[in-house]
Amino acid sequence: MSNWTDITALPDLSKAALARLARLQPLEVPKGTVLFQPGEAVKGFVIMLEGRVDVFLTGPTGREILLYAVEPGQSCVQSTLGLMGGEDYSGEAITRGPARLVLVPKEMFLTLMGEDDGFRDFVFRAFAKRMQTMMHLLEKVAFTRVEARLAQILLERCEAGVLTATHAEIAVMIGSAREVVSRRLDALAKRGILHLERGRVEIRDFETLVVLAQSD
Image 1 (cartoon, rainbow, N blue to C red):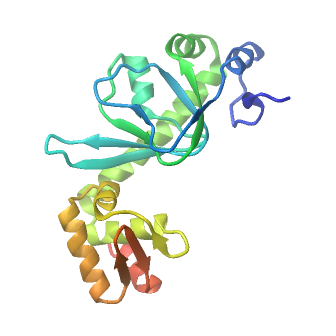
Image 2: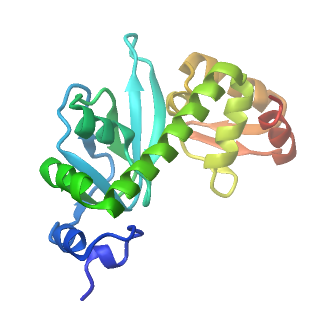
């Protein structure tokens, strides 16, 4: 029976590194599990096999923003920074649905970083892609209008034309306040672009929403 390293998009690691990683047992994590919180020490490097983990940052006022999501083949920049720089977590990570992952312990991670070129390249490539994603997020929050960001997230996250999420959850996704998002959603609903129900947003006019998403 194959182990998880045989079905994961790992780089060209040495046989010794693969054998070491193969001894780690994947973890089955249910939906809504908090993987880490601000102030906690980083325990290891996560390799996602299935599912998705959302990483949030909470400000002094309690307002949250979705920093990024970790899916199979992607990395958690907070974990990488903590392992290499010794800093504690500043964000919170929660599984969006059932997930399957492998946790590479800190000692093994540091050993592989020092000894295996393939593993080191894998970590740095994933880290660079994640930093690009975060820079794009900062650019959107700083320079894109709320209405455009809202339209973009509705189009990206909807399934069969419906996004199942509260106004507060949507606000976290786009880095805005719930009250602002509620006003924008109500305005779009009055124009017939959306239909709103509790915890549910249905897109009625895709063409207009696409125009709004591209308006900036």
